[in-house]
Image (cartoon, rainbow, N blue to C red):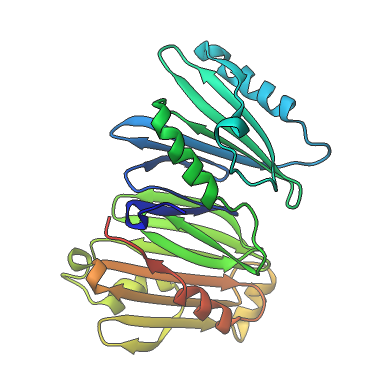
Length: 292
């Protein structure tokens, strides 16, 4: 583990999790690729994929080399286990160096036989002392989970969802983060709004949440801190559900985290029976980790 945890941040995305220096900021976020910068300069990248069939490190690195040809970058071997001998033996490990025009980055390809995930790391900090950072990162790396939940953590939000939840879209905009998941017959949307004080200056939390609630009706409200909305199709609306014109249910919780100046919202819709317990569990595990 990193020696000083307050200087590190948790990153958890699509099944992988690791600790990175807090001064590294994610600037490219795709479903299975993350790129980080520090002061506008590249510092770290991670990419992963599920391997079907026989694993071949050579094939993956040849693909990487082909993608680098337009940049005139060249890959060469790096004996990572000689320099970082404490890397877990649970993985098949291949080290490489990438020679760019003016610098050399270090890379590691890990393959886990248990979950059959291949993960590629690239560290752009070339000072030899920074190899300790790569060692610390690898010591925190997780690529599969033994329980039924997995963590999603990026910037200042953290959530836990069932491992079956599949990320369908995400958007990180100034003032608004949105993550949308598909889970069997349900869609689950997570929202983070900021700054709460400015958003709620001329409207109540209930008025703000109503814009997200659709046809749902407010069923619970704790003054200006949290509120819930629900909708269950009945009568002729059930016919619209059969033709996929309306959801069978809507569930929404909106709450203010005052000391973080943040509004968090969790919304669920589905075509079958509402799982209220699941929605409350997801909402309870959706938190703000730091002031960003």
